[in-house]
Amino acid sequence: MGDVLYLDHYKSASHAPVDMQSQKMPQTERERIETIRDNIEELLNMVAGLRRDPASVALAASRFGIMRMYQIHGRAHTMAFVDRCIETAEIAEDILGT
Image 1 (cartoon, rainbow, N blue to C red):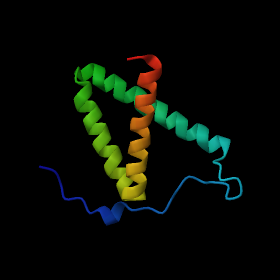
Image 2: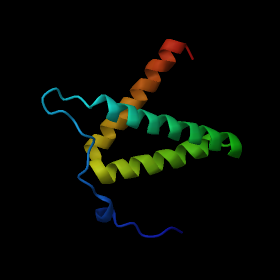
Image 3: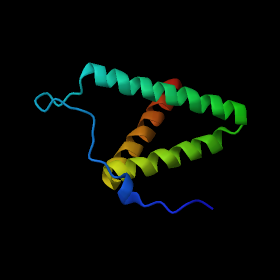
C-alpha cells in the first residue's frame, strides 16, 4: 500500500497574485497558468493513449488534483472548482450536441 500522508505538511498560503483593486490576475500570470494547464492536459492525453486506458488516467489525475487542491485551498473552494468543471463539460456537450 501507500505511505501515510500528513496533510498539514502540504498546506500552503500561497495563491496566484491578484490585483486587489480590479480583482484580476495579471496577464502574464494568467498565461503562465494556462500554459501549465495545457501542458498537463497534453501529457495526460499522451499517457491515456499509451496505456489505452483513459478512464484510469482520468481517475488518477482527478484524485491527485482534488486531493492537492483540498490540501491547499480547503473543501469549499475545491468542491466549487469541481462543480464548475462539470458545468463547463455539460455546456460543451450541449454546444457540440454530443
